[in-house]
Image (tube, rainbow, N blue to C red; front, side, top):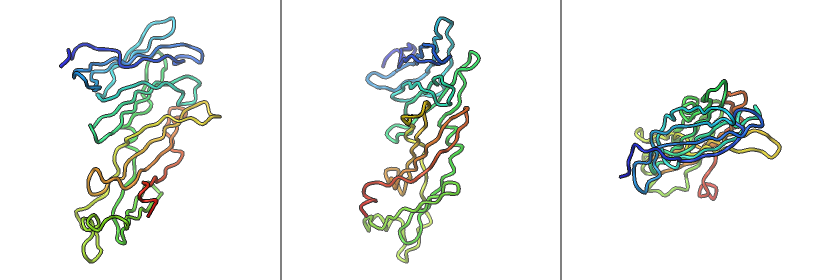
Length: 234
């Protein structure tokens, strides 16, 4: 085990954080207590403002593969700071927090916990080998009739009714991708969540959400269902 009290530079990048033409350096510091592991704890986010003082904040999460992404998310012609990583081991939930600079402060404008509070997707198994997904006023259906009989027998009774103990749930996001169209000057967030069936490894499909953070407000552009290749062949 390493010296867990020694902080090291996990990532650093330079962009125009404080004004349209500035060159400010962003540094992510943290402790990596386990030899050979990319797990980081006790992180600190530092902004070295060009020709001025530095400011720093404590980053409130621990995780794996921590990294920085700098880009304009809110349309103010300056870059915001996105800290990315993962937690939950092999289950693969993603950390994503975005900060803007304002009045000599770093202010959080997005996090995965904010998205979880807005997440209104629900799922359930239905008769006739269907999975129904409802996200707000949008509804989706997945046909699972091509699954093996052994699998379907875990979900359905002999009369075709759904067993009461089986459920479908929508996982927390496993991916937050910053994406930008060629004619746009700001980034969108492409967010993906697994639709999980009888066990955690049973991925029935993916809910994909495209959102923007213009004027620091989360706004959904579209939401859709992404099917797996095996389901497309059915």
